[in-house]
Image (cartoon, rainbow, N blue to C red; front, side):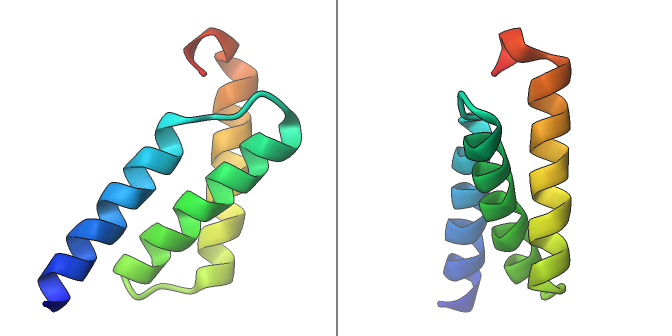
Length: 68
């Protein structure tokens, strides 16, 4: 059961990353959600995961807006 939960969390993170968001706030929110999911799967710090995910998604979407 634990292995299944990890796969569901990883799939959820991938789905969140696939939708970048239209505004800065949406991009930050979706990125932080993906970061928290990834941190939960890897048993990392959730706050750090949220921060890294938000910054990463916003940076990517601002750099490559046509890909979002």
